[in-house]
Every structure is written in structure tokens, then in C-alpha cells.
Amino acid sequence: MTPLEFPAADRRGRVEAVAARAAEVPLDVLVVSHPSNVRWAVGFTGSNGTLVLRQGSVALLTDARYRDQAPAELADAGLAGIVQVVEVPSGADGEAVWRTLLGPSGRVGLEATEVSWATVRELSRIAPGVEFVPTVGLVEAGRSCKDAAEVARIAAAAGAVDRGFWSLTSLIDGARSEIEIARALDAAIVDAGADGPAFPTIVASGPNGALPHARPTDRVVGIDDVVVVDVGAVVDGYRSDMTRTICLGSPDPEAMVVWELVAAAQAAGRAAVREGAVVSAVDLAARSVIEGAGLGERFTHGTGHGVGLDVHEAPSIPRSGGVPLEIGHVLTVEPGVYLPGRFGVRIEDTVVVTPDGCRSLTGFPIVLRPTRSDRP
Image 1 (cartoon, rainbow, N blue to C red):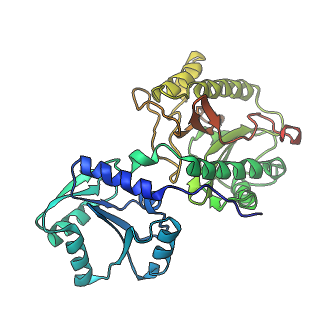
Image 2: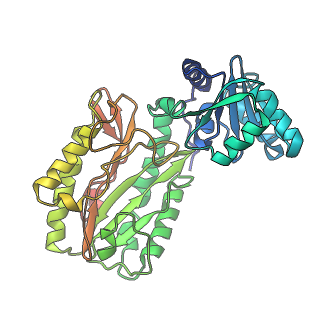
Image 3: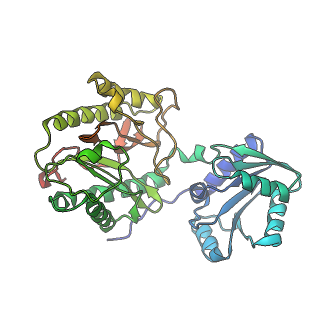
């Protein structure tokens, strides 16, 4: 396939925004260690990278494996000369690097969800005069609303899933297992332009579909089985997430009724996604449809979550409260109904908040029996 071209990200603006939020806390130094936060801020994709931001300077700490990669990626991000690459050796020499960067005193922020207690103790030993402060969301506050560069990548990942998903019309033939179908679907998505799957693909047929996070098994998928397929792709680090529940034969009549119910709930949830709406309104809209049919207790999970560099990120969709939706928020809407021992139904799209409401980035038709005539 022709290599995709995407808008450039404003990484300099991202770094400046994170530094400004750290100063407001106030912090003298902010240490960013979550890999997705590091990648979002400066474009570094290696497995060992930590950002240290202090007034007037930003350093990317890594090791000798990334001696060439780190400067190249910073240059690609437009950050050459702005972010300094610091190679951290092991042992006492590495401790000396940390001691210099943290300083003799002051308030140093550490990402509370990423840094272990053992690491805090070790840093306290290295820099005993420093006050270490747990931080939450200083980088994620910038990540939650996607810019055009990010939406383009998520849309590309969603498009790969849309194209690859059509392979199921031949893969579900009454002879293949859930595991075999999941593996073949992953390959089809890569062939359609993805870098890989965004998460372990779920193919759950018949009674296995009643497990919301089922793992594919050796169970052979029958033509008349109702099948829950939850799949995503990754393109240039960004992920998509989509679920369809399908049957290529003659489904259980009750499953058809439940499918229509879940489809209506998902449509109601999507209609509630708009700028300014409290995010829990999305859950209320979808859940009310299912509760109205007397199946509320069988909708056992949240209605959705944010999607981006991570497949689960802000904003979450709680049952009450939550943040107001903003233009650029990317989230899933995924109600489901699960009848133990029989079947499950879930329908999920990844959508982006727009000035007019929302736009679906995933586009495979929402139909129980997909056929080639449904293909755009």
C-alpha cells in the first residue's frame, strides 16, 4: 500500500503546555515516565525514555541502545536543540546524572500511576533534599483532546479495521475456531494498512459471547452462531476500537431481538455525544434503552472510554458525573447485553466530538448479517 501521510504534530506546543501546567502546581521539576506520555510529548518511541522538565530545560533520559534513534526522533518532531538527549549509564554514574537533573532541593513531580514506591525510595536516596510530589493528569490533560494529526491517525487505524473486517464473511464457514478466525482477522487488518492489532482481538461465539472480555478459544464457530468480534488496529502509535456482533446464518430469534435493542442503545449513546454534554450523559442515554427493556442487569460494563495512543485513556464514561465533552475528544460508545450460557451482543464505534455532535471514525456497517452488498 502507498505509505500514509499525516499532518505534523505541534510537539513544541505540547512540551510548553506540559511545562506550564507543572509550573502551576507548582513544581520545580516534572518527571514524565509513562511511555505514551513521552511519545505524545516528544515523539520518542523507544522502550526506555523519561522526560525531565525544569524551568528553561527539557531532557530525554534513555540508554545507549537509543543513542542514534532518540536524536533522530526528536529532530523529526522539531525538537532538536530544544530537548537534550541524556544517556544514563548504570550504577553510580547513572545516579549522578539523576542527582544533577533533580537538583539539591525543590518540589519534583512524579507520575503517580506510573512510578512505583520502590522507585520513589530510590530517588529519595539519590536526592535526599528533594520533596517528591505525586502528580496525576499533567500530560493526560493535553492528550485527552486530539488534534488533527492525532484524529487522522486514529481514523487510519479505524479504516484498516473496516477493510479487514470484511474477511469475516469468508472466515466464518463452520470449520474454523475462534482462535483461527482471530489470527486471520489480525492478518487481514495488517494487509489493510495497520501496523498491527491494537489489543488482543476478541472472537467470542455462542455462549462465549456472554463473556464481555472473552478470549478466543478452540470452539468452532458455527454459521448460525451469534459472534461478538471486538477488534482494533494501531497506525503510527494510535489505536482504534470497534465491536460488531454478527451472524452469517440463522440466529436465535431472541438474539435478533437483543441485537436490535443494543443497536438502538448504541445509537442513543452516539446521539448524546456532543460538545458540552457531561460525559455520563452518554452512558445514561445508552443504558436507559437497555434498562427500559428489562435487561439493565445484563449490561455489566461501562458504556465507553477514550482512545488514542492507549486503547483505554481519558475521557472515561462513568455512570454519573464526569467531564464535559470537548471538541477533539475521541471515545467509544459500546453498550452490550450478555445472557450467560447463551450469547452476548455488543456494538461499539470510536467517535470524535465535533462542532456538530460527533463523527464515527469506525465505519463497518451496523448489521447483524453483513453481506458484500453492504460494503460501501
